[in-house]
Image (cartoon, rainbow, N blue to C red):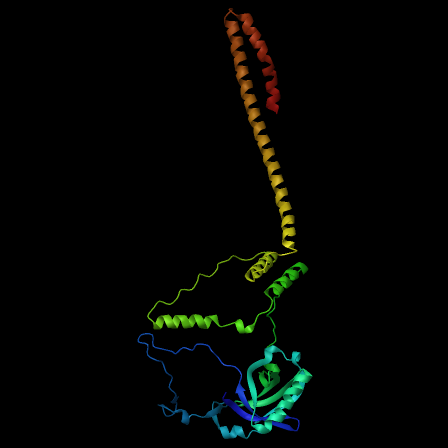
Length: 355
């Protein structure tokens, strides 16, 4: 691996010559800017504003723009003579427990390689001291034009250094957390714990960049003159209104994916479902009772209407009988008896009208 910085680790009066090597590499796919009409490359050219001409890389230097807009030239030689002890030295300033370092501060990672045979002994000494103490070293170093913080720790048989942001470069999480009061019940936490236990751990070696692989498939298809692969339709699920039900479903799905028995013990959702069903049942009974009362009222109304109609018919028949008996003498006794039978209907009529 190619070194990007040469210097030494200052460990008290011990100096360890080292080389700084990048510990990480990017595998992301990079694209070029092109002219969409003809596919031509888009390139940036650097012009000097004063001479209005393109300049080469060897003609380009650094400069600091002052408040009034004037440019102050700064050369690499100016920076190489900075009055800093960390200009070419990783100066260890303290040893602290690893949990004292906030992961938010961690930046780029490097390997520190011993530079030459004389560095082997002090390098190994520092490595073993870090191992036995279960601590990490906090250091200051200068790289790429500015002083930085670093954290040294042991990785295998090597010493790695993580660049650290200065504390004032990490923002406070103000206004990020929900500003509403939320109560999380013990049963919900129990299900969350069950989901965490079911998902378990993972071997990070098994994880890979699926997005990069998908982009590579698209590039291969386009290069072969084929249509790019179609992406599957995203699942369009509705909003989850019941957190307990969502947790239970997640636990079941996680167990099924691992080939375990898809059974969730101690499901508080079922108890709550029963309690929720009670109001629905009561509501059903109430609605049934109301329906029965309404039907009874309708039946009573129909009965009343029918009785009134019957009474009216009987009254009409009685009137007709009376008139026929007065107009004709034949069968008068029989018709009078019929009229007498109709009399209760006439008497009942006022009571029914008042009802």
